[in-house]
Amino acid sequence: MEEIACNVCQSDNYVVLYEGRDRLHGLGGPFRLVKCQQCGLIYLNPRPTREEMGQYYPPDYEPYAQDIEQAKSFLSGLDYRYGVAKRCRMITKRKGPGRILDVGCGVGHFLSGMRQRGWQAFGTEISERAAAYARERFGLEVLVGELEEAKFPAAYFDAVTLWHVLEHLHDPLATLVELFRLLKDDGLLVFSIPNWDSVDAKLFGEFWVGLDMPRHLYTFPRPALEKLLAKTGFKIAEEGCFFGSHGSFVLSLQFLLEEKMSQRSLRRFLLWLSYTKLARLMASPYFYLVDRLGAGPIIAMTCIKRENMDWQD
Image 1: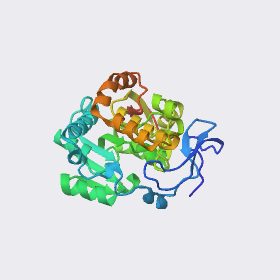
Image 2: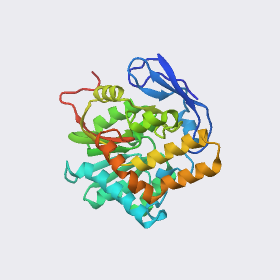
Image 3: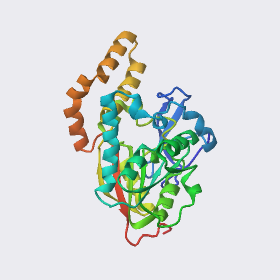
Image 4: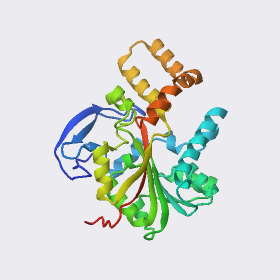
């Protein structure tokens, strides 16, 4: 474990928000989540080092699931593929085919979708197992390791994506600086992160799945996110909550009930009920409204380079 300063403003003045354990996989704790008193960034402190981090990503970690769309039911598979298509649409509605880099590409479903739409696809991934699957199943060019180790040429990509990745990085500031270098002047940076300003975050508090200690090293309240993007040369062009609302809500509910409800049979019934298609259908107007208001649990950002920006300034 290592003690760190704020990644955005380098201040070491913070307050403790929560102490919690790994609720998703049960791999240790307690972990401490703190908030920077200067810029508002929320981060794990102390946190696992890069060398220690691998133990918190077990083989059944969902982004590394090899054929997730086939492992689920037919309808769930359609829903998953629709989610991939929505991600692709965030790029293709703004730019024609070019080169795209997906940082933390997992087993490659999104990149495969982009290649089907005419893009030249590249990925980086820290999991050797996931990267191997992306290469073998989809024939993708995926490099294993941190982004900075790939040493891509400057101004090489028309778009770069990070789906649920920024919060996992040990140094998001350094990664964004590198992405600024890799993107063409008219390139797009698209990423999704847990939405600290969501209804779920306020409703569930320390049980909100968006915290996911210790895998999520950072949570980005809006002021801290804007400061981080400005510091690294980007500005937000578009944002919205497009996916993940029901699943995130149910997982947070599960964490809350496991902690607060001692009656196991009732807890199991409520969780079973919340996962049914009927419950999802009945709740869909609520989730639709919350997403349209920008208060869903996951928010996606499309960013462009700021004009006349030298990040070193």
